Length: 254
Image 1 (spheres, rainbow, N blue to C red):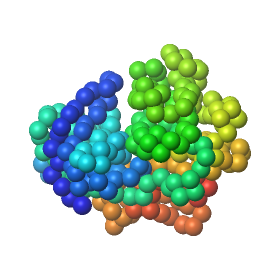
Image 2 (image 1 turned 180 degrees about the vertical axis):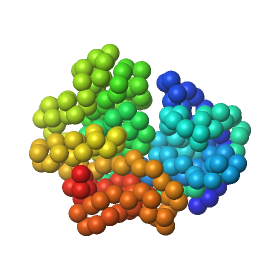
Image 3 (image 1 turned 120 degrees about the horizontal axis):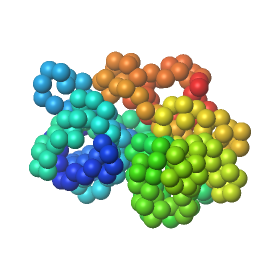
């Protein structure tokens, strides 16, 4: 659905990383973890293509939240919004994380901005009293986004930073095998850069753990019509926007 959403709150949570909460009750009521919204960023002709953003959080009664890093003209425009500004949003779009099997233990794996769709999921799991564990990684301590929220929402959080400023010095994939051995998850839900997700998928297969990945891809239409965001799978090319963005990691041709 397409709505005009009003900015309720805006915060810079790390250098060039922002959270915006929008009043969008129609989207909030139907949103599921792993889905995204498509936002019109600017009014001029140069901003004709919308930008996709994972739904970072949703209050079922009235609001949704996005988390984003300023990387270009569209996100620069978003970062300049003020409370009470209005934005054109389409959503919720895509297929989110599947919880049909109701696993006993869940592990969230978030690399950098990959935390964006996982807070919504962590909140849902906490409300359902699901045993949830987190493995998080970033370049440095400052970019371990939503660390305290995850500490509150999940049973245990294990961190890695590339500069060693918090947790283990190294990559998230360096600490994941030991975390799996220690916490014994039934399924992993992961989001982050493609190269990270590929390694997470390999580790999950080696450890015989089911794994779902939320892919990050550039999109144009956002509804599956333009085929600009396809990913190669074992059954052919699939659209990240319409068939995903969440896929079973075993389905992807890494």
